[in-house]
Amino acid sequence: MRTDGDMWDIVSSVGLTALGVATFRALEATSPDPLIQDDYAPLFVAASGHSHFIGLLADPSLLADIPLVPGFMGVRTRFFDEFFSAAAADGVRQAVIVAAGLDARAYRLDWPAGTTVYEIDQPKVLEFKEKVLSENGARPKADRRTVAVDLRADWPAALRRAGFDPGEPTAWSAEGLLPYLPGAAQDKLFEHIDELSAPGSRLAVESFVTGVDVKRLTSIESKYFGNISPFGDVDPAELFYDDERADPARWLTERGWSVRGFSSSELAASYGRSVPELPEELDELWRQPRLLTAAR
Image (cartoon, rainbow, N blue to C red; front, side, top):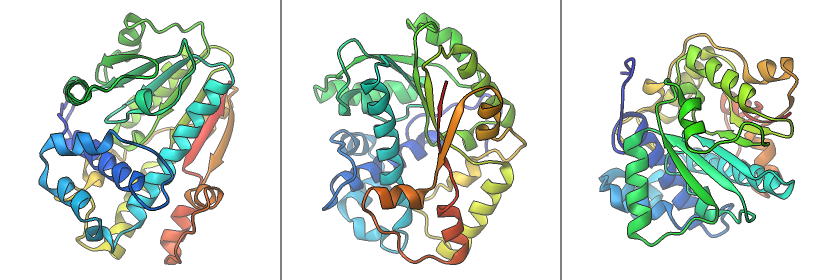
């Protein structure tokens, strides 16, 4: 259960879900026709010593009954990869990855010269990440700056101390984050991003519209997947907050951002991936515009 001010490392609580996502990225990257490239994800999984995720990498057939979860992570990762690449191509030279987890975009993507990539996350998560990358001689393709701070605290101040310039256009991402924040913290997150975004800034978000959607998703997954969990003994939904919060698309639109929504089904098709025939409830979820981009 979550508590106010709770902390975690990479093999506990919310940190463990980041390790799971790294596992699914590694599986996608080593599939016959991958949507992404990620040579770093397997290194994180191996260094964690977590038997469940190490076992999944050794035997992906263990996920045969729930292929949608790893498949969605491939689509989601590609979406955010393309978001940052497009922003960089348009001249944006400042990127902020909010709740960066074990994301390695500062190393994976081809950033133009002069780009600074800020990664915000819990101190122990960033410490583990830095250790693994250093031990493997990884070199970032941008000026990478880590910001070790809880998103429920004054993270904008920490971001500024790291060198962030609110007068420059910024590409922001909030991937796999919002359900793990209390409603008030989510709304404050968007307020801060809005305040820190110069004209020309843009944002990519994975969004649940309301807490009801989180509960519904959990119910549907339990109905069709039973006790099978790609995250092992941890059910990510137990770490979610389901209190009231603003609809990100509406909130951003009302403040002058130009917003577009994309469904998982739509993105999968654009990437040349077919979506298997799904029960009506699951199909409806895949067709909801959960992935958003916004431009100022």
